[in-house]
Image (cartoon, rainbow, N blue to C red; front, side, top):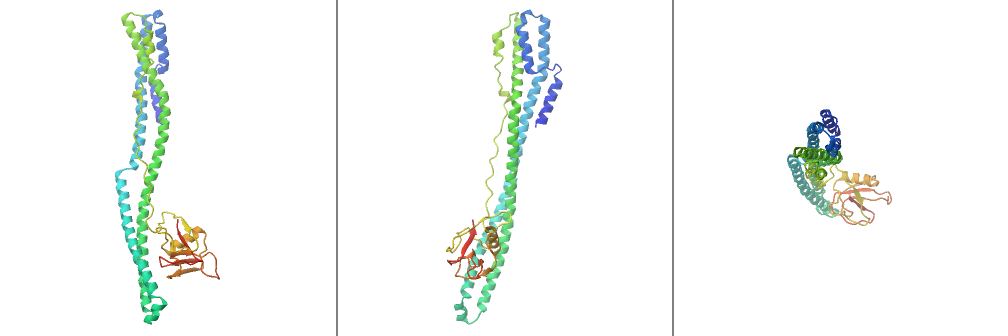
Length: 351
């Protein structure tokens, strides 16, 4: 922007054959007014002609500078507005709708998996196996649970992919807005700084035009210079120089968090509940073995030795035992979603 404005200034100076600034013209014309009575008509006319010639290039150059700065502001605003294009809004909405559709399928599958886990725990209990005197029903229940677990994992993976597609677009939207807004704010500061000297030149040019008019009117009337009118020339309306700063689009809303799972495009935080708690709060539960491992690592909890299975006498899903307790397991992942208190285990949850 500054380079472009310097080129405007260069063109303005190049067109000013007399090398006079607007402020220099004011002093020159005030000198003519103050010495009007002692100057010859030819000298006065020569001074007025020189001033008119200078103003013929100075005034358009000032307007050119103002127009250039206004265009620069308009282009910067347009760059911010591009980030908020309707096509992008529609694309992000479609991606979010697709992700949420997968989230619904995942929630349904997880509910069915919870039922399969409960069925497995019931059918595979010692009492049930002894009652039917066969482990076949238990094997079938375990197979159903494993099949459902595999299906739920696939649906969750599809959700996480869809979520990350939306999250990528949402992140790009935020980045675009923040980047272009920073450019706009920096440019606006530059424009405000540029307008200071331009306004002084404009005032001086308008004042010079006014003083010329007073001198010419007095010459035509054959009267002495009206210094009251000369003084009034210093009151200049600068509203034509007003730079318009259009309203900018509002900052984007925060990108929504994941409805379920642990999409690889985000980094969830984790917490360990107190010993003696049975389950993580709703919405904070870690529902996959893999994420339970990630949570243990993130919290600095020991993983090996590992226990993974279905058991109704411990907390549900992900939990830890930090003490060996006779060489027992540290990491626990219970396929049963809702468990019970066991004093040596603490649920591990999303924060």
